[in-house]
Amino acid sequence: MRHWLMKSEPDEASIDHLAAAPGQCLPWTGVRNYQARNFMRDEMRVGDGVLFYHSSCPAPGIAGIAEVASTPYPDPTQFDPASPYHDPKSRREDPRWLLVDVRLVARTALLPLAAMREDPALADMATLRRGNRLSITPVTPGEWAHVLERLQVRWARA
Image (cartoon, rainbow, N blue to C red):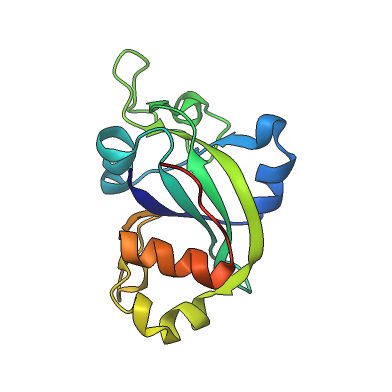
């Protein structure tokens, strides 16, 4: 099992949207970076842990815990001309963009970005590196355990 940090702008898909969704599960639409797409396509597995991160907002940080709930499949927004994520070069027979579904495990108190940056145990976390703009980054087992401890969340998955 692997662990991931997945960023979402809360006005588009927040931890509250996830909690209110049917089955507390949402498709992770709109990824338009090849490296992030490749993480979903090649490395994510159903059951992987997710740190659900609110970005581009007044209080960025980890807002909850989720899990990968599906194998990758084509992101339908790439084919929708009305979507801000429309990609006219993508073809249904050979889709360029994929997504996975994520399912809520727990809403948590916010672990703010500033607190993450000040925490020596998270100093090497990929999402905190200067210049990192990826919406999906791997999280090491040590970082995962430390964040769960800080958030007082118990992860009972294998």
